[in-house]
Length: 264
Image 1: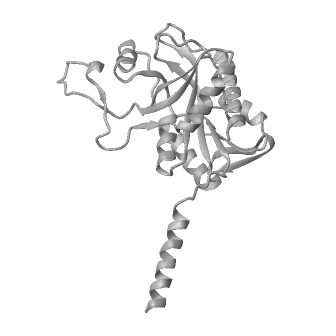
Image 2: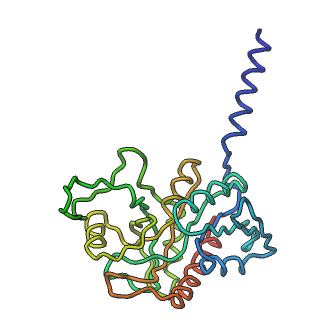
Image 3: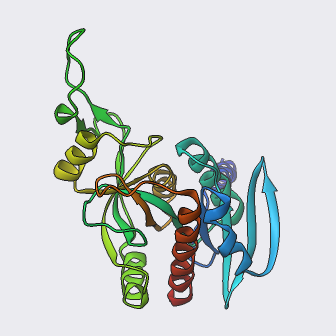
């Protein structure tokens, strides 16, 4: 009877170990970008890169200095980001995740090339909207972020954020600031919308992937950092331009490489 109980206990433990990844902090740094232009510089910087395709998502594994690094091209949007993050966690057991790329500014004082470190990342699709009858239209000033049904707000890891801030002193393209990133499958251009979230939630910029990635990382207790370089700013009257955005994306990746090199 005692032996049977021990066997049963061992079997339960084995099942738990197989179903939940263990993170000892010794795995690779996982760096994510949605578009080719947001990962190409990272991939070129890898020593001895190996391309790995899992269920249609592409990863490159190599080294930056002595650090093991996996670069992930997630694809755009929250669904792609969540899927790519989960696959990477299961396959590579990363020590930490850096989600980076370009973003559109909300804050009027953000210039092109400025970098926002997402101290706080908000799933901007999770909102409460007040009732309005037909013909009454929309009033975004009545909207609010909700965590009633699921987690909506995520924090970047304090240690990773500290390293990134320290490297900001060496970034010569613009400012490096920390603040709130709004993240959802939306390209917002309505000025009332931008002003409302900047005023009520302190939203500094918008992109489409970091909240989904942060949510998966939080579920598996993987330290996470969001890094976004400003490639447009509707509030400041600076429209998005593909060629300029590509140049700016390179600067963001070079900054992330400096973060990786500075990790303890």
